[in-house]
Amino acid sequence: MNSFITCGIDIGTTTLSAVVLDITNGKQIEAFTREHRAALISDKSFERIQDADRILSLAIQLLDSILDKYPEISSIGFTGQMHGILYTDKEGRACSPLYTWQDGRGNEMMGAVSYAEYITSVSGRAAASGYGLVTHYYNSVNSLVPDTAVSICSIMDYLVMSLSGRNKPICHPSVAASFGLYDIDKKDFDRSAVLKLGIDIGILPGIMTEDKPMGKYRGIDICPALGDNQASVFGSVADEDASVLVNYGTGSQVSVITDGVEADPPLEVRPYIGEKNLICGCALCGGYAYEVLEGFFASYARALGNNGNQYAVMDSLAECAYYNKNKGKLKVAPLFKGTRENPEIRGSVSGLSVDNFDAGNLILATVEGMADELYDMYSASDVSDRTILVASGNGVRKNKVLQSLLRDRFGMKLSLLENKEEAAMGAAMYSALCMGYGLSEIKKCILYSDIE
Image 1 (tube, rainbow, N blue to C red):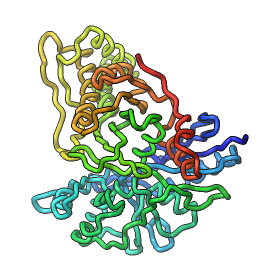
Image 2 (cartoon, rainbow, N blue to C red):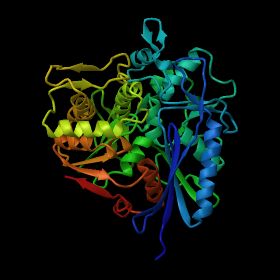
Image 3 (cartoon, helix red, strand yellow):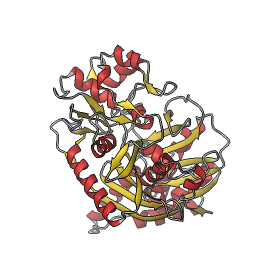
Image 4 (cartoon, helix red, strand yellow):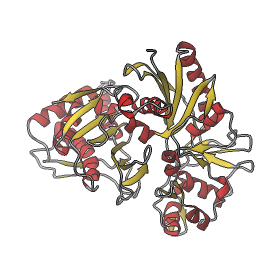
């Protein structure tokens, strides 16, 4: 029996990642990562933009090199950074930069309230800076929409559209919902809310609700692009009914697959695959909080003539504090960037005493705060029957104390994902689903190591 080989491409905020996956044998054959260096300099302090066509060109170069090396690939899946948008013209070409999920124009003031707050009040739907339709609304009000623009789309849908020769973008619900003003029950944009804001309905992309290929590139089936959160879950969670997924990258997320369609803020319900949804909680500082703390210690080390990074020392000090049972005595709320709902809020350190104010306890308390933030979000959901905690992302893969604290806090068996590039992995697996492969066969590709 011939193997069924797939490829997944992930367009991240700073990197392009890809995997080649043997579905038949459940084996990840090879993984790739490239920096795209697409960030553009802006004279606006709030603006975070990237060169969309540079990303497109580099992604096609990467894909072509993979297809040359593995000509037996039968399907290609895609994923990438959610929320952000770019504008396309009638030919399907980008006529703007990519406005990323980090863009801050939605927090700019519109009289007494921010643009995001105004959109929420008028539409009745939660909106935050970085959401695609918040970005578009700001651009519309301030005459920043390109004259040739006829549609908006995500960067990964721009890639799919370009590869398939289309001139009108079509988004998977997981991507469309990330733009905001989305009705999860109808699997469509809330068009009445869009119209209340004076946004032209025609600017919206189409929505793909079927799990099937969208076209071909070099004779190979290409499939709809998933949001990176959904792709990561699909590529990380083997038992979808029993698992909770925590992911630590620059930010962090907790995700649970559910049949439900409601959740209280700060939790969101996002479309998943098929008829399922995700309950998802997002923290703006996940692994970045540990990076900020390393910068604090590194600045002191440099004053002493040590220019190396401090992660190994920090890990050792945190581990000593953990096994000395110093957990919980010092509290750190690592809200260096606030929250999506309240970007102005800041973190804190509390519970200081002469007995606990040392480097090890400070590091341990920061890592505890990173774990607590996601646990508190999970606890606020109505999902309480999960027994397996799956952890993914370099922020947790490299931090043994965080692994232990997550296991303690959630009170569950912890499984650490072994596969590399879980979002690209999920995209490759989803392409197999679009080609008719069963879920149980696809999920055999997910490998774990259990943390005792």
